[in-house]
Image (cartoon, rainbow, N blue to C red; front, top):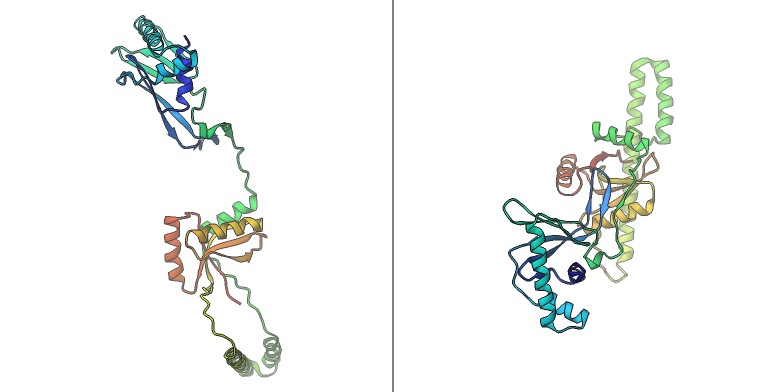
Length: 311
C-alpha cells in the first residue's frame, strides 16, 4: 500500500492528516515571497510540518483508503496499522523514511521524529499553475540617476526664469540711454519710471479682472444657484511622488494616491520629458516641509520637495 499517495491526496483538501499511532502532517498557508538577493518570486503555498504528538485516529485516512480501494473501513484501518508498525521498525533501525512528494523522516538521538519537507508539490489549490520565477535586474536610465542625485543633494530647487513684459524692455532701453546721457542720477529717474509704470499696469489689470468677476457674478444671478465643492491646488511648493515617461502611468499614480486620501494631481512635464505627479502643493514653505516629513514617514520615503517659481 502506497500510504504516502493517499496522504498527499488529502493534503490538498485538509490542513491536518493524521496517521493513527504515528503522528500528523499539518499544513499552514503562507503568502507569496520575494528574495531580495536573487530577485526570485515565490508563489503562495502550504508549509508542511509533522507533529508526533497528534496520534488519535480521526478516521479521515482510513475512510479515504476505503473509498479509493473499495474495501470496508475496518480493513482499511488494519492496513494502516500494519504499515505504521513497519514504518516505526525502519526508524528504530536508523533508516530514513521517504514519503514521496511530502518529505523525509529520521529519528534523532532523543528518539524523536525529525521531519524535513521536500516541497515538490504545492498543496495550496489557489496557487495552482503558479511557479517561481526570477525577474531580471531593472536597468535604470542614467539621466534618471543623475536627477535623483541632484534631488538628494539639493531637494529644493528654484527656477530663476521669469517672464518679462514688453513695457519693461521699452523702459529698460530708455534707462540705458539715460545712463549714457545723464549718468547715475538720470538712470535712477528712469528706473523709478519703470517701477511706477509696472505698478500702474498691475493695478489696471486687477481692476479689469475685478470688473469682469463682478459682471460674471451679476449674469449668474439669473441662473439657478448651485454649490460646487472644488479643491483648488495652488502654491509653488510641490511634494513630488514620482515622474513617469508614460503619461498613463502618471494617471494611475494620481488615482492610487487619491484612493489613499491625498490631493494628488499632475503638475506637467519636466525638462526631461517626464510627467510629474505630486501629493499636494502648498503656499507656505514650512507647511510643505511638515507635510513632506509626514509623507516620508507614512507613505513614501523617496518623496521630495520641488519649488517652482510661479509665473
